[in-house]
Length: 228
Image (cartoon, rainbow, N blue to C red; front, side, top):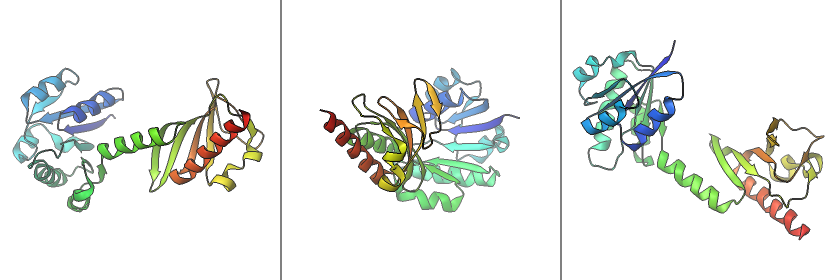
């Protein structure tokens, strides 16, 4: 049975969510108080409604009690944004929705939303700023994925001037506190072992803390400088 997902707030973030959910095998319902926003959404999904998420009767009419996941995608760029989000979260909890995800623009209200029933909080502005910071401070980082606390999986491109080294000699776990968990080479993805080499133009996935990845990046620069 397909999962049913409710997206509350059909601004840019909400519409982007819908576009990504459309690539998955899920049913999507979108609601917003802005009729223009709903009209934009209806071009992407069959079920989009002009609806006030703080109105219990209106929510009943569209049958939200049947959804598996509700995402409150409202921005907090207006004075009523947080209040609307809080009231909506309380109603969703009352409807028995098990997974309630709230979009926040800052940490201030995180504990409040978790206390009243939110199961997850996402902070797209924080994620975007971290990605920008990583991109411009770590030259070889392509992308990263937060796992827990300070631990991340980083995708890194090894420069073409890098001198190949065996993973045994590299000894990344002891020297840099990180693990190379995947290597993508010539469109072939594999899990490396002690017999493998790290080569120029490898696309690698590393598990570790950002501070350790920075140390590894410094090693890469040193390796290249020795070849010049």
